[in-house]
Length: 170
Image 1: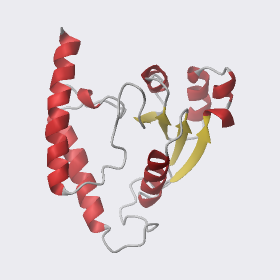
Image 2: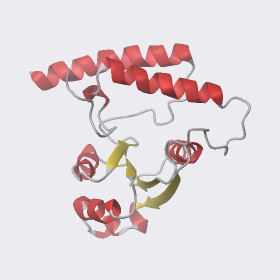
Image 3: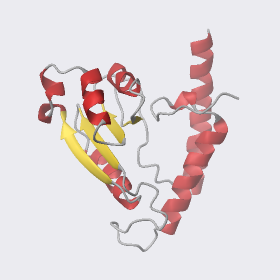
């Protein structure tokens, strides 16, 4: 079985076991948070001392708030920028942006206009990249699902991933 991908940008690259583990962890974290204030940090704080940069080439309320809340609940911090806030919107290449960000943050979530920008960021070996949706791939960034919804989502993802793997192999 191939190793799981380093980045969270193409769900079809993840094997069934990894997808199930991700969704099971999300479910367990959601269940543990019932009744807590939204800003309380999870006891294990797996993102403690980590910073997530969130880049929005296109706006999204749900993606922005779900990622910001998630990184805070996991114990980390976020920096939010639109393409207009950065040189990225004025001719800086995505590769230059990746080099700059890799010196300042641990991970990047990008809501991109196109999947090529997400893939270009992922070529930087120092950054962890999470796709926040683009014109090619739509992710469920919050993963806040009931167990039944999680199982249904995994089954749909497995079918879609198998189809994508078959198409890539053809």
